[in-house]
Image 1: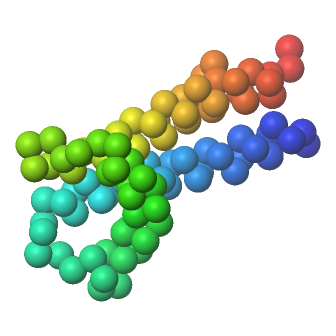
Image 2 (image 1 turned 90 degrees about the vertical axis):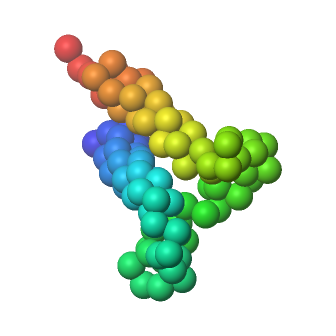
Length: 97
């Protein structure tokens, strides 16, 4: 087992979970009455907030809407495709003819 195989096995689920959490975070913005400090919502807020804080300093709200979670979904989706997609870097490194 090579290092690229291990990296693929670790990065795939990690990036997938992060994308899922940010999508769930986007859905939660539709419900402002949801208390983000309560149990089910804190599982989504705690891991995503460290990514959002620095980006919010660079990207102001657009029309009163925080678009930073959408940007992170795009970034993580792009990374997942570039690294682990059908012709991704790690996928091609693991390929043996």
